[in-house]
Image (tube, rainbow, N blue to C red; front, side, top):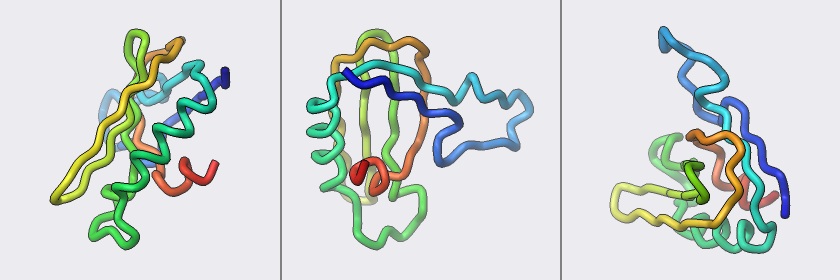
Length: 102
């Protein structure tokens, strides 16, 4: 198991009037090998040269007992779910290539 904490994510929106780091913070424990497999699966859908910066990110949604990893393109999308022990539910968008390299 590995402890994952994402604070603020890669793409946060500080212009929101009710912005707080708690809203964009995700904290969970997940099996390292399962996470690596899921991230590498989702990373295959990322474009090498995306037309928009937001399309190079992975959306992480931690809720209940699962972590959802999603990537989107103009043509295709991919989602994968991982069983996780979620300590703080939330949503974050992180750099897909960076997360895959880690």
